[in-house]
Image (tube, rainbow, N blue to C red; front, side):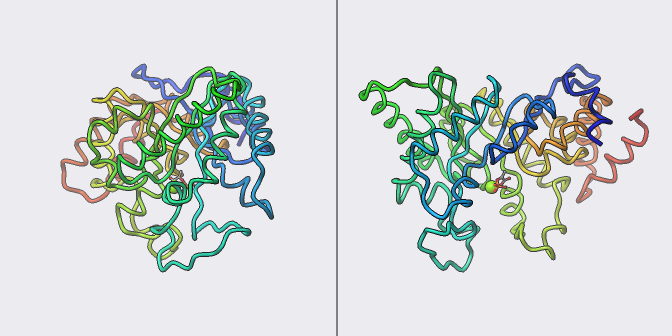
Length: 325
Ligand code: PEP
Ligand code: MG
């Protein structure tokens, strides 16, 4: 399959209407980085940093992490890497952390909630990231933000670390972007100041969908019941796109749906200009985007959504069957 799309590797994902969608890849380990060149991804749109913590028997040391992050930036050769700070909790338990029993771990004390309540590990991680940059641009994204204050506080923690690094005379990143993951419905309704303060926002569709439909992403019985092409969910995505456009804030989508070709097309038609996915999905998604007119698809989606159907997949497939793909 890789070779089938190899000829597309260095071509942009430009649709027939002229719109270009930036395709980035998701990663979590140094071993993923070779895929950056192989897949033709423009960068790493989501680097899940918890994997480095999960594979160890002890808390990694700051220097150790800085070396890993620096190696990731070296391997990216100037392409953008968005580092997501630790997303751990009782759903992703670290072997060396005291286990907290929670009735609903996915909705429990995880990710930014842990980091804000017990900031030691996140401060260490932020210091490691700042040191790893060695003058290069750095992008940091905070996971599982549910309200504006959480983002403001986390962002300030990072800025405090920048100040400390400066006081110590350490080299600072050449540029710093601070973003938030939108994975809880509440954040979509945050004040406009949130959308303006964030340098970028990335929709974590896996969690967002789980909380939008109240359907556990780990539960096979319910996870397939609802899909991204549900008209209500698309209407919600549209609102997020509109709020980001209004604030002129870059919006991306990094959940699994970004790597499913039909879903990716629909996200692009709804205004998403950056998608981040597993490397193997880049070829198929790019192929499809290059074959269609997204403005036309947008009209199909609008019409389908206005028709009162629950799910627009059949309508989109119907339209696709008339396309030369
Ligand atoms: C998501 O929730 O969509 C996401 C990208 O984060 P994760 O899958 O790591 O929870
Ligand atoms: Mg998530």
